[in-house]
Length: 352
Image (cartoon, rainbow, N blue to C red; front, side):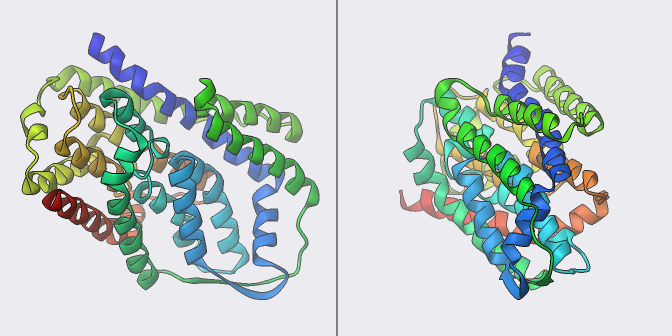
């Protein structure tokens, strides 16, 4: 029971953000904020915008803020940009935040709850995270882009004639600005990201005069919580103690691959906790485990809560992404990106 409670205490802030994040994206969409921002970004007249810019923006947003912010704010925006550009399949552009929410989520402790858990449990700092996982994250992002650009449109071309909704830009921009400030400085004041998102929900509900009950992904959150509880009961606490204490180069690679596989089988948060529960100090094996559960979590929908958040936002925007279509989108890009990240971590271990 103590272990189950410990698992729940680590998991519930992410589930709370999931419950608040989907309605937040829906409310901003109802306000017309994303459509207006898309019009402003494309500009009036016939212009082209590089998708690489969105790739970099999503990476920076993930690294500096967190992966959930990337999903909530950039997924609807990318979708609107794709639709305004007349792309046949807007899913590819809308997937940019999905990829970068995974590839860039190991750069700083704040980037991902999994990384934050490791920092808090093993008393490591932001410099330790940067020195171990920044280069693998860059490798994943770079290789991911090189593969993505071969399969999907690299440019957004549009002939925009409409003007943005100034009210939507003003109100939505104010709310989003407040969100970003809350996400950046809230943790220092003891305010969780889900509290900031919920406050934004309340403000937007008053503005648009709608309560989006149907967009609250309650069953999804309960499903992930049930998986985490089952793992806490079934898997012995010290099951991975010996492997994670092995710091050889080959072991680093094997552990990262194993972590990636487990994350995509049960979700990256429970997978991370299985490894963290086995150790009392940080090791190269734990760095490999953390990288694996982060960078490869995008492969299948259940791999991360961010993926489930993305799917719910896509459904709220009229696109239902089936499993086969999801895998066809993610695996060709995420698999080589994951291999690149793990290879870089192994090189780091070999030279240190």
